[in-house]
Amino acid sequence: MTDSEAMLRRQAQWQKDRRSLSWPEKIRMAEQVRESAERLRDRPGPARTLPPSGPARRPYLATGRCPEF
Amino acid sequence: MQQSGVIRDYALFGATAQMRYTEPVATLDAGVLVAVKSGNRLDPLREIYDFCAVRGYRAAGEAIQVGAWPAQFIPAFNPLTVEAMEEAVPADFDGVPLRVVRADHLAVIALSVGRAKDWARILALLESGSVSRTAIAELAARHGLADAWHRFENRFLND
Image 1: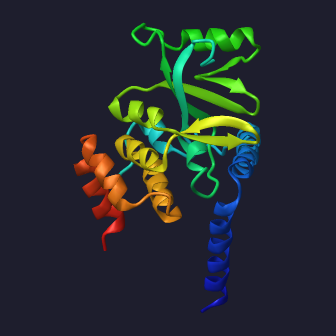
Image 2: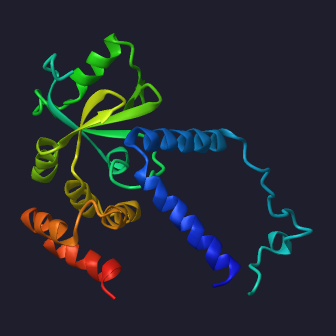
Image 3: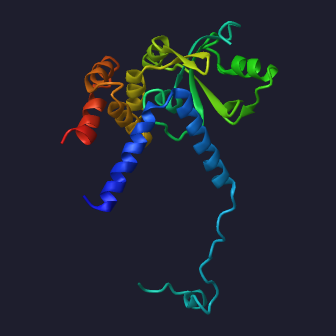
């Protein structure tokens, strides 16, 4: 077994072991995940890079002809 | 709410109920199946919202915020969900008694809904050993979902 396989197996076992937690403990764990997800969702995303515009970069705008692909 | 007569019956279902049987899963809200007294009205949840509002629980979108969780109340809408609610089992949440839908009903409700996360729910319930393929097959057949179960088995369980 490679190191990666062993690590994945340990991770899967760790996840399965959480099944034995009490129901309230599992709910609290899900609560933490939900709060983290909400914080991530509320964060502003990365600035979007728009494609270049204008006739210099898109000559078909000036010619009115579609580029051939 | 039950003692006040706003609802006749209730049971926790969805992901929060699933976690009683499986490992924890990510979810945004707590689903509650309810049988409301005014089930035939156009706005069957109005009395629940009013009941909660006077006690300081505010509406949050389609849900009502109860502590850390948005609780989404869903009237039991077909024979399967009515049976799931009526045959729910008592559970204890930090000393608070609650009724929770059984694992076999959770699996068959998921089968009837059929989104990707519902397939994952069925697989998680099976893997946890809280429900058997036979139990799901029987319950699915009783609710007209035998074909759906065969398709699920062929897709995910049969080699």
